[in-house]
Image 1 (cartoon, helix red, strand yellow):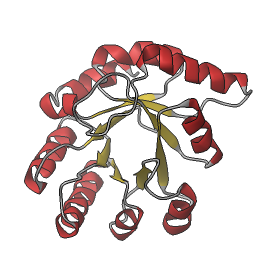
Image 2: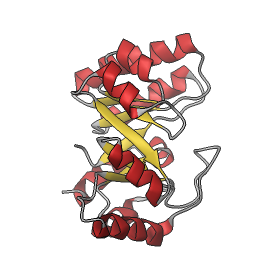
Image 3: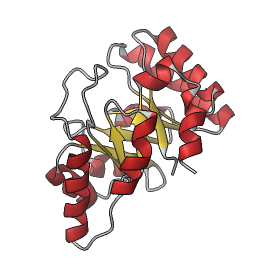
Length: 204
């Protein structure tokens, strides 16, 4: 599983597609489409276009929140918020081979996601970010450390956790040392897609 996820940004379908193309041109291999403003028809069109693009670039395409849209467009999987449908429902509809990720903010969320057998967990936010409107309590490095230690104390394997929320290039190595698998980045890559290669260098 890739260690760098790009969460798409853009207020319009054209902005979204432009930013996704830029990320792909700069070597991103995992895209999660997150677009809250589009209507159903526009979102479907964006996901279909992105599916073709990701296939061309041999990149993974994940749809945020919408299980049925992931099924309809044959995306590689879906990412579910804590209030956005069940992992069990997604698994039944999409099948065993598709990727299912889930959001978490607390240790209880993480344990829930592990019990649900998510393929990966998006845990955050690391710090304040303007990308998301309803921001959960900020974790900081210490918050991640406490959660990873709590999981280890349960004598279970630490799941693939991705840090999200204001993540920078300099954060990756400290997060990895804590036991975090990868990072999900939105605004930073949208503004500076050239940083994708810099992330890849530290992720080797």
